[in-house]
Structures are given as C-alpha cells and as structure tokens.
Length: 124
Image 1 (spheres, rainbow, N blue to C red):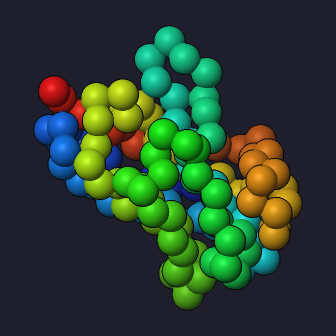
Image 2 (image 1 turned 90 degrees about the vertical axis):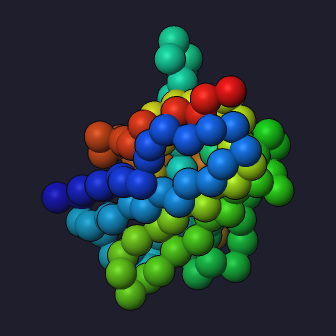
Image 3 (image 1 turned 90 degrees about the horizontal axis):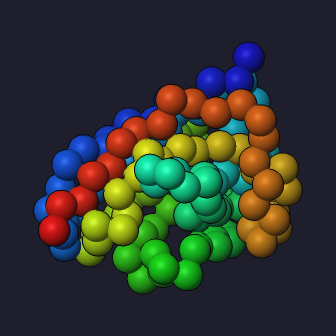
C-alpha cells in the first residue's frame, strides 16, 4: 500500500525559508522519480519540482527556479523540498508523489495516490 506523508509546512514571512519532507512507502523508493506538487486555494494542483530515480536530473517549475531545491535520501525513503526566498504566491498545500517515468524529469505524471499534503503560508 502506497503511503506518502508530507511535513515541514508552516507560516513564514516573505523572504523566509522552509524545508518540506515527504516519507514515502509502498514502492521500491530508489527505483522511482519523485515530484513535488502544490495546490493554491481555488486552483488546480500544479507541478513544482521533479527528481529522477538516482538524483542526477532535476526539473523545476519556472517560477521556483533558483529558489527551490529538490533532493532525496534513498536510505530514508524521503524526498525533500528546500524552499528559499518564499513569496506570497507560493502559498499552497504541497504534496509529493512518485512519478511514472523514473528517469525523464520532463514527464511529471504522478501516480493516483496522494498524501494529505502540508500547508505552506507566506505572509507579505
């Protein structure tokens, strides 16, 4: 059974930083690409960042490039999202998921099972 448990969100002022974590289980973690997604109020869920199975390739939404960094620890079955220079428009619930293509980070199709997400609120 796939489980995804996101944590690390919170309320932060504009320009601040947060580090999100996602503990994943139910699949052989090291064989999968992983992604972070977010859903702002009234919006559809959108792609934020992707990392291939061995950590060699990354892909980011244009608006977070240079501010967010995705990483993984295969020993802990955990993926991280370091978020710096946060802006009010980054406010959303953030989710992680396995991605269907293990190596091509331009293919950001997630699987169907989602966790509960973690709320990130950036005040101006």
